[in-house]
Image 1 (cartoon, helix red, strand yellow):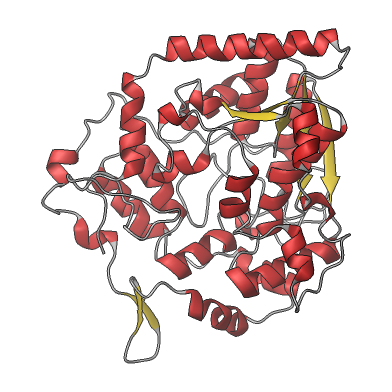
Image 2 (cartoon, rainbow, N blue to C red):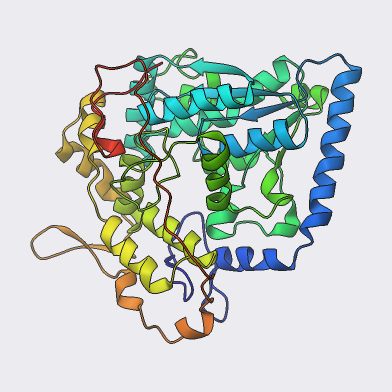
Length: 427
Protein backbone atom coordinates (compact mmCIF):
# COMPACT_ATOMS: atom_id res chain seq x y z
CA UNK A 1 0.00 0.00 0.00
CA UNK A 2 1.21 3.49 -0.78
CA UNK A 3 1.04 6.01 2.10
CA UNK A 4 1.34 9.79 2.07
CA UNK A 5 4.89 10.88 2.73
CA UNK A 6 3.70 13.73 4.98
CA UNK A 7 0.65 12.42 6.89
CA UNK A 8 -0.77 8.93 7.54
CA UNK A 9 -3.35 8.44 4.77
CA UNK A 10 -3.22 5.29 2.62
CA UNK A 11 -3.86 5.31 -1.14
CA UNK A 12 -7.22 3.54 -0.63
CA UNK A 13 -8.61 6.34 1.58
CA UNK A 14 -12.28 7.32 1.10
CA UNK A 15 -13.37 9.52 -0.57
CA UNK A 16 -10.64 9.13 -3.15
CA UNK A 17 -7.28 10.69 -2.43
CA UNK A 18 -4.52 11.66 -4.90
CA UNK A 19 -0.75 11.57 -4.37
CA UNK A 20 1.48 14.00 -6.27
CA UNK A 21 4.98 13.40 -7.63
CA UNK A 22 6.48 13.95 -4.16
CA UNK A 23 4.19 11.36 -2.62
CA UNK A 24 2.19 14.01 -0.72
CA UNK A 25 -1.60 13.59 -0.65
CA UNK A 26 -4.27 15.97 -1.91
CA UNK A 27 -5.52 16.63 1.64
CA UNK A 28 -2.08 17.81 2.77
CA UNK A 29 -1.77 20.06 -0.27
CA UNK A 30 -5.15 21.73 0.40
CA UNK A 31 -4.18 22.59 3.99
CA UNK A 32 -0.78 23.80 2.76
CA UNK A 33 -2.46 26.06 0.17
CA UNK A 34 -4.24 28.03 2.89
CA UNK A 35 -1.05 29.93 3.72
CA UNK A 36 -1.26 31.62 0.29
CA UNK A 37 -4.88 32.78 0.63
CA UNK A 38 -5.80 36.36 1.56
CA UNK A 39 -8.12 35.48 4.46
CA UNK A 40 -8.80 39.13 5.23
CA UNK A 41 -10.34 39.52 1.80
CA UNK A 42 -12.32 36.28 2.16
CA UNK A 43 -13.67 37.36 5.55
CA UNK A 44 -14.83 40.59 3.90
CA UNK A 45 -16.69 38.50 1.28
CA UNK A 46 -18.42 36.65 4.12
CA UNK A 47 -19.31 39.84 5.96
CA UNK A 48 -20.83 41.36 2.80
CA UNK A 49 -22.79 38.18 2.03
CA UNK A 50 -24.24 37.99 5.55
CA UNK A 51 -25.15 41.69 5.50
CA UNK A 52 -27.10 41.12 2.28
CA UNK A 53 -29.11 38.23 3.72
CA UNK A 54 -29.68 40.01 7.02
CA UNK A 55 -31.07 43.06 5.21
CA UNK A 56 -33.28 40.83 3.06
CA UNK A 57 -34.70 39.10 6.15
CA UNK A 58 -35.46 42.46 7.76
CA UNK A 59 -37.24 43.70 4.63
CA UNK A 60 -39.41 40.57 4.59
CA UNK A 61 -40.08 40.67 8.35
CA UNK A 62 -38.44 37.29 8.75
CA UNK A 63 -37.65 36.31 12.33
CA UNK A 64 -34.55 34.33 11.32
CA UNK A 65 -31.95 35.34 8.74
CA UNK A 66 -30.18 31.97 8.45
CA UNK A 67 -30.30 28.32 9.53
CA UNK A 68 -27.41 26.54 11.22
CA UNK A 69 -27.65 22.72 11.14
CA UNK A 70 -26.25 21.66 14.52
CA UNK A 71 -25.46 18.56 16.52
CA UNK A 72 -24.19 20.37 19.62
CA UNK A 73 -20.58 19.53 18.83
CA UNK A 74 -17.51 21.73 18.57
CA UNK A 75 -18.29 23.04 15.08
CA UNK A 76 -21.90 23.79 16.04
CA UNK A 77 -20.61 25.96 18.87
CA UNK A 78 -18.15 27.80 16.63
CA UNK A 79 -20.62 28.33 13.78
CA UNK A 80 -23.21 29.72 16.18
CA UNK A 81 -20.60 31.88 17.93
CA UNK A 82 -19.57 33.42 14.60
CA UNK A 83 -23.11 34.07 13.38
CA UNK A 84 -24.56 35.34 16.65
CA UNK A 85 -21.68 37.07 18.41
CA UNK A 86 -19.36 38.17 15.59
CA UNK A 87 -21.72 38.93 12.70
CA UNK A 88 -24.93 39.81 14.57
CA UNK A 89 -27.14 37.31 12.75
CA UNK A 90 -30.27 35.73 14.21
CA UNK A 91 -29.94 32.05 13.32
CA UNK A 92 -32.46 29.25 13.77
CA UNK A 93 -30.63 26.14 14.98
CA UNK A 94 -31.94 22.92 13.43
CA UNK A 95 -30.94 19.43 14.50
CA UNK A 96 -31.82 15.88 13.54
CA UNK A 97 -31.98 13.54 16.54
CA UNK A 98 -30.50 10.22 15.36
CA UNK A 99 -31.09 8.56 18.78
CA UNK A 100 -27.50 7.33 19.19
CA UNK A 101 -26.94 10.19 21.64
CA UNK A 102 -24.43 10.37 24.46
CA UNK A 103 -25.01 12.13 27.76
CA UNK A 104 -22.00 14.33 26.98
CA UNK A 105 -23.48 15.28 23.62
CA UNK A 106 -26.79 16.22 25.22
CA UNK A 107 -25.01 18.43 27.74
CA UNK A 108 -23.14 20.18 24.93
CA UNK A 109 -26.33 20.67 22.90
CA UNK A 110 -28.03 22.24 25.94
CA UNK A 111 -24.94 24.39 26.49
CA UNK A 112 -25.11 25.61 22.89
CA UNK A 113 -28.71 26.80 23.23
CA UNK A 114 -28.06 28.36 26.64
CA UNK A 115 -24.78 30.13 25.86
CA UNK A 116 -25.94 31.73 22.62
CA UNK A 117 -29.65 32.10 23.50
CA UNK A 118 -30.77 30.68 20.17
CA UNK A 119 -34.01 28.97 19.17
CA UNK A 120 -33.62 25.27 18.37
CA UNK A 121 -35.87 23.10 16.21
CA UNK A 122 -35.27 19.36 16.66
CA UNK A 123 -36.67 16.36 14.78
CA UNK A 124 -36.63 13.06 16.71
CA UNK A 125 -37.07 9.88 14.74
CA UNK A 126 -38.71 6.87 16.41
CA UNK A 127 -36.50 3.96 17.60
CA UNK A 128 -38.19 1.31 15.45
CA UNK A 129 -37.42 3.20 12.23
CA UNK A 130 -33.81 3.75 13.36
CA UNK A 131 -33.41 0.04 14.07
CA UNK A 132 -34.86 -0.87 10.67
CA UNK A 133 -32.82 1.67 8.68
CA UNK A 134 -29.54 1.04 10.49
CA UNK A 135 -29.73 -2.73 10.05
CA UNK A 136 -30.73 -2.51 6.39
CA UNK A 137 -27.90 -0.10 5.51
CA UNK A 138 -25.39 -2.17 7.47
CA UNK A 139 -26.37 -5.21 5.46
CA UNK A 140 -26.24 -3.42 2.10
CA UNK A 141 -23.44 -0.82 2.34
CA UNK A 142 -21.80 -1.42 5.72
CA UNK A 143 -23.03 1.86 7.25
CA UNK A 144 -24.93 1.92 10.56
CA UNK A 145 -25.38 5.72 10.64
CA UNK A 146 -26.85 6.35 7.18
CA UNK A 147 -29.94 7.86 8.83
CA UNK A 148 -27.77 10.27 10.82
CA UNK A 149 -26.08 11.70 7.74
CA UNK A 150 -29.28 11.67 5.67
CA UNK A 151 -31.15 13.46 8.46
CA UNK A 152 -28.66 16.22 9.19
CA UNK A 153 -28.16 16.81 5.44
CA UNK A 154 -31.89 16.92 4.62
CA UNK A 155 -34.10 17.93 7.54
CA UNK A 156 -32.58 21.46 7.78
CA UNK A 157 -33.24 21.89 4.04
CA UNK A 158 -36.88 20.91 4.57
CA UNK A 159 -37.13 23.55 7.32
CA UNK A 160 -35.44 26.23 5.18
CA UNK A 161 -38.03 25.67 2.45
CA UNK A 162 -40.97 25.46 4.86
CA UNK A 163 -40.08 28.73 6.63
CA UNK A 164 -38.55 30.42 3.57
CA UNK A 165 -35.13 31.03 5.10
CA UNK A 166 -32.73 31.29 2.14
CA UNK A 167 -29.32 30.94 3.80
CA UNK A 168 -27.82 27.81 5.34
CA UNK A 169 -24.56 28.06 7.33
CA UNK A 170 -22.34 24.97 7.35
CA UNK A 171 -18.93 24.80 9.05
CA UNK A 172 -16.16 22.92 7.28
CA UNK A 173 -16.48 21.02 4.00
CA UNK A 174 -15.43 17.74 5.57
CA UNK A 175 -14.09 15.87 2.57
CA UNK A 176 -11.90 18.84 1.63
CA UNK A 177 -10.42 18.76 5.14
CA UNK A 178 -9.76 15.01 5.06
CA UNK A 179 -8.73 14.02 1.55
CA UNK A 180 -8.71 17.26 -0.44
CA UNK A 181 -11.79 16.53 -2.56
CA UNK A 182 -12.01 20.23 -3.48
CA UNK A 183 -9.43 22.99 -3.38
CA UNK A 184 -9.92 26.30 -1.58
CA UNK A 185 -10.53 28.23 -4.81
CA UNK A 186 -13.53 26.05 -5.75
CA UNK A 187 -15.65 27.91 -3.14
CA UNK A 188 -17.87 24.84 -3.14
CA UNK A 189 -21.38 25.18 -1.70
CA UNK A 190 -23.83 22.58 -0.42
CA UNK A 191 -25.54 20.55 -3.15
CA UNK A 192 -28.05 17.72 -3.28
CA UNK A 193 -25.67 15.79 -5.55
CA UNK A 194 -22.74 15.77 -3.13
CA UNK A 195 -25.10 14.91 -0.25
CA UNK A 196 -26.49 11.91 -2.14
CA UNK A 197 -23.24 10.61 -3.61
CA UNK A 198 -21.12 10.78 -0.46
CA UNK A 199 -23.13 11.38 2.69
CA UNK A 200 -25.98 9.04 1.67
CA UNK A 201 -23.92 6.51 -0.30
CA UNK A 202 -25.93 7.07 -3.48
CA UNK A 203 -29.36 6.36 -1.96
CA UNK A 204 -32.28 8.78 -1.88
CA UNK A 205 -35.26 7.70 0.27
CA UNK A 206 -37.26 7.09 -2.93
CA UNK A 207 -34.62 4.52 -3.97
CA UNK A 208 -34.98 2.68 -0.67
CA UNK A 209 -38.78 2.62 -0.89
CA UNK A 210 -38.66 1.15 -4.39
CA UNK A 211 -36.22 -1.68 -3.71
CA UNK A 212 -37.75 -5.16 -3.91
CA UNK A 213 -36.54 -6.07 -0.42
CA UNK A 214 -37.49 -2.70 1.06
CA UNK A 215 -38.84 -2.99 4.65
CA UNK A 216 -39.62 0.74 4.79
CA UNK A 217 -42.70 2.91 4.83
CA UNK A 218 -42.69 6.62 3.91
CA UNK A 219 -42.95 7.37 7.64
CA UNK A 220 -39.60 5.66 8.31
CA UNK A 221 -37.87 7.97 5.82
CA UNK A 222 -39.88 11.17 6.34
CA UNK A 223 -36.92 13.38 7.31
CA UNK A 224 -34.86 12.39 4.25
CA UNK A 225 -37.01 13.53 1.31
CA UNK A 226 -35.24 16.44 -0.37
CA UNK A 227 -37.39 19.39 -1.48
CA UNK A 228 -38.00 19.74 -5.21
CA UNK A 229 -35.86 21.96 -7.46
CA UNK A 230 -38.85 24.31 -7.78
CA UNK A 231 -39.15 24.65 -4.01
CA UNK A 232 -35.41 25.31 -3.64
CA UNK A 233 -35.50 27.88 -6.44
CA UNK A 234 -38.56 29.64 -5.01
CA UNK A 235 -36.73 30.25 -1.71
CA UNK A 236 -33.41 30.96 -3.44
CA UNK A 237 -31.72 28.62 -0.97
CA UNK A 238 -27.93 28.37 -0.82
CA UNK A 239 -25.68 26.65 1.70
CA UNK A 240 -22.24 28.09 2.33
CA UNK A 241 -19.25 26.56 4.10
CA UNK A 242 -17.47 28.88 6.54
CA UNK A 243 -14.18 27.09 5.82
CA UNK A 244 -14.19 28.84 2.43
CA UNK A 245 -14.06 32.23 4.15
CA UNK A 246 -12.11 31.56 7.36
CA UNK A 247 -8.82 29.69 7.72
CA UNK A 248 -10.39 26.65 9.36
CA UNK A 249 -8.55 25.25 12.38
CA UNK A 250 -11.01 23.07 14.29
CA UNK A 251 -8.76 22.40 17.27
CA UNK A 252 -7.90 26.07 17.81
CA UNK A 253 -11.57 27.02 17.40
CA UNK A 254 -12.68 24.34 19.86
CA UNK A 255 -10.24 25.56 22.48
CA UNK A 256 -11.76 29.03 22.13
CA UNK A 257 -15.22 27.48 22.71
CA UNK A 258 -13.92 25.61 25.77
CA UNK A 259 -12.40 28.76 27.22
CA UNK A 260 -15.23 31.20 26.52
CA UNK A 261 -18.40 29.09 26.34
CA UNK A 262 -17.92 25.96 28.41
CA UNK A 263 -17.78 23.33 25.64
CA UNK A 264 -17.15 19.99 27.36
CA UNK A 265 -14.57 17.48 26.07
CA UNK A 266 -14.42 13.71 26.34
CA UNK A 267 -12.36 12.17 29.12
CA UNK A 268 -11.00 9.29 27.05
CA UNK A 269 -11.79 7.60 23.72
CA UNK A 270 -11.67 4.01 22.55
CA UNK A 271 -10.46 4.62 19.02
CA UNK A 272 -8.71 7.99 18.93
CA UNK A 273 -6.66 10.42 20.98
CA UNK A 274 -8.84 13.38 19.89
CA UNK A 275 -10.97 14.53 22.84
CA UNK A 276 -12.99 17.15 20.91
CA UNK A 277 -14.56 15.53 17.88
CA UNK A 278 -17.77 13.49 17.36
CA UNK A 279 -18.83 13.54 21.01
CA UNK A 280 -22.58 13.47 20.48
CA UNK A 281 -22.93 10.15 18.64
CA UNK A 282 -21.83 7.11 20.62
CA UNK A 283 -21.08 5.17 17.43
CA UNK A 284 -19.30 7.85 15.37
CA UNK A 285 -15.92 7.04 16.86
CA UNK A 286 -17.05 3.51 17.72
CA UNK A 287 -18.80 1.01 15.46
CA UNK A 288 -19.18 3.45 12.56
CA UNK A 289 -15.45 4.11 12.50
CA UNK A 290 -14.58 0.46 13.22
CA UNK A 291 -16.46 -0.49 10.05
CA UNK A 292 -14.16 1.83 8.09
CA UNK A 293 -11.20 -0.02 9.56
CA UNK A 294 -12.70 -3.42 8.76
CA UNK A 295 -13.37 -2.36 5.17
CA UNK A 296 -10.33 -0.20 4.32
CA UNK A 297 -7.73 -0.90 7.03
CA UNK A 298 -7.66 2.55 8.61
CA UNK A 299 -9.84 4.55 11.01
CA UNK A 300 -10.40 7.79 12.88
CA UNK A 301 -6.94 7.87 14.44
CA UNK A 302 -5.55 8.11 10.90
CA UNK A 303 -7.89 11.07 10.20
CA UNK A 304 -6.99 12.79 13.47
CA UNK A 305 -3.24 12.15 13.27
CA UNK A 306 -3.15 13.44 9.68
CA UNK A 307 -4.95 16.63 10.74
CA UNK A 308 -2.48 17.20 13.58
CA UNK A 309 0.50 16.65 11.26
CA UNK A 310 -0.87 19.04 8.63
CA UNK A 311 -1.33 21.74 11.27
CA UNK A 312 2.23 21.09 12.50
CA UNK A 313 1.21 19.98 16.01
CA UNK A 314 2.47 16.42 15.68
CA UNK A 315 5.35 14.71 13.90
CA UNK A 316 4.60 11.97 11.40
CA UNK A 317 6.29 9.49 13.75
CA UNK A 318 4.02 10.54 16.64
CA UNK A 319 1.00 10.29 14.36
CA UNK A 320 1.95 6.79 13.23
CA UNK A 321 2.25 5.72 16.88
CA UNK A 322 -1.32 6.95 17.49
CA UNK A 323 -2.62 5.14 14.41
CA UNK A 324 -0.99 1.87 15.45
CA UNK A 325 -2.40 2.21 18.98
CA UNK A 326 -5.99 3.13 18.14
CA UNK A 327 -7.09 2.12 14.64
CA UNK A 328 -7.36 -1.68 15.22
CA UNK A 329 -9.22 -1.42 18.57
CA UNK A 330 -12.57 -3.21 18.87
CA UNK A 331 -14.97 -0.53 20.21
CA UNK A 332 -16.88 -1.12 23.45
CA UNK A 333 -20.09 0.26 21.91
CA UNK A 334 -20.26 -2.68 19.48
CA UNK A 335 -22.04 -4.72 22.17
CA UNK A 336 -24.64 -1.96 22.66
CA UNK A 337 -25.28 -1.72 18.92
CA UNK A 338 -25.60 -5.48 18.42
CA UNK A 339 -28.16 -5.64 21.25
CA UNK A 340 -30.09 -2.77 19.66
CA UNK A 341 -30.48 -4.42 16.27
CA UNK A 342 -30.58 -8.03 17.51
CA UNK A 343 -27.48 -9.42 15.81
CA UNK A 344 -24.55 -11.57 16.94
CA UNK A 345 -20.96 -10.50 16.43
CA UNK A 346 -20.45 -13.48 14.13
CA UNK A 347 -23.32 -12.28 11.93
CA UNK A 348 -21.87 -8.75 11.98
CA UNK A 349 -18.45 -9.96 10.86
CA UNK A 350 -19.97 -12.16 8.16
CA UNK A 351 -21.82 -9.14 6.73
CA UNK A 352 -18.61 -7.12 6.58
CA UNK A 353 -16.54 -9.87 4.97
CA UNK A 354 -17.43 -9.19 1.28
CA UNK A 355 -16.93 -5.44 1.86
CA UNK A 356 -13.26 -5.76 2.87
CA UNK A 357 -10.90 -4.06 0.42
CA UNK A 358 -8.66 -6.79 -1.04
CA UNK A 359 -5.89 -4.25 -1.61
CA UNK A 360 -5.30 -4.15 2.17
CA UNK A 361 -6.98 -7.27 3.64
CA UNK A 362 -6.25 -10.97 3.12
CA UNK A 363 -7.03 -14.17 4.95
CA UNK A 364 -4.15 -15.85 6.72
CA UNK A 365 -3.53 -19.58 6.83
CA UNK A 366 -5.60 -19.77 10.02
CA UNK A 367 -8.60 -18.32 8.16
CA UNK A 368 -8.48 -15.01 10.00
CA UNK A 369 -8.39 -11.64 8.27
CA UNK A 370 -5.11 -9.74 8.48
CA UNK A 371 -3.82 -6.52 6.92
CA UNK A 372 -1.27 -6.91 4.13
CA UNK A 373 0.43 -3.67 5.11
CA UNK A 374 0.13 -0.77 7.57
CA UNK A 375 1.53 2.73 8.08
CA UNK A 376 3.97 1.37 10.68
CA UNK A 377 5.92 -0.23 7.82
CA UNK A 378 6.41 3.19 6.19
CA UNK A 379 8.15 5.25 8.87
CA UNK A 380 11.23 5.83 6.75
CA UNK A 381 9.94 5.88 3.19
CA UNK A 382 12.30 7.74 0.80
CA UNK A 383 10.19 10.92 0.48
CA UNK A 384 9.35 11.45 4.17
CA UNK A 385 12.11 13.91 5.07
CA UNK A 386 11.53 16.09 1.98
CA UNK A 387 7.78 16.29 2.76
CA UNK A 388 8.20 16.98 6.48
CA UNK A 389 6.74 20.19 8.00
CA UNK A 390 8.41 21.89 10.97
CA UNK A 391 6.47 21.70 14.22
CA UNK A 392 4.89 24.82 15.65
CA UNK A 393 6.67 26.06 18.78
CA UNK A 394 5.00 25.29 22.11
CA UNK A 395 2.70 22.52 20.85
CA UNK A 396 0.40 21.40 23.65
CA UNK A 397 -1.82 18.38 24.14
CA UNK A 398 -5.60 18.30 23.97
CA UNK A 399 -7.43 20.04 26.82
CA UNK A 400 -9.53 17.72 29.00
CA UNK A 401 -12.31 19.68 30.73
CA UNK A 402 -13.64 18.52 34.13
CA UNK A 403 -16.65 16.24 33.81
CA UNK A 404 -19.84 18.14 34.46
CA UNK A 405 -23.00 16.97 36.17
CA UNK A 406 -25.11 14.37 34.41
CA UNK A 407 -28.27 15.15 32.50
CA UNK A 408 -31.74 13.81 33.27
CA UNK A 409 -31.14 10.15 32.43
CA UNK A 410 -29.49 9.23 35.72
CA UNK A 411 -30.23 5.51 35.24
CA UNK A 412 -27.61 5.32 32.52
CA UNK A 413 -24.16 4.40 33.72
CA UNK A 414 -21.41 6.45 32.12
CA UNK A 415 -17.87 5.20 32.55
CA UNK A 416 -14.67 7.02 31.80
CA UNK A 417 -14.91 6.18 28.14
CA UNK A 418 -17.59 7.72 25.97
CA UNK A 419 -18.31 4.32 24.56
CA UNK A 420 -18.89 2.63 27.91
CA UNK A 421 -22.37 4.17 27.97
CA UNK A 422 -24.77 1.26 28.16
CA UNK A 423 -27.92 2.82 26.63
CA UNK A 424 -28.80 5.51 24.14
CA UNK A 425 -30.08 8.89 25.32
CA UNK A 426 -33.26 9.14 23.27
CA UNK A 427 -34.39 12.67 24.19
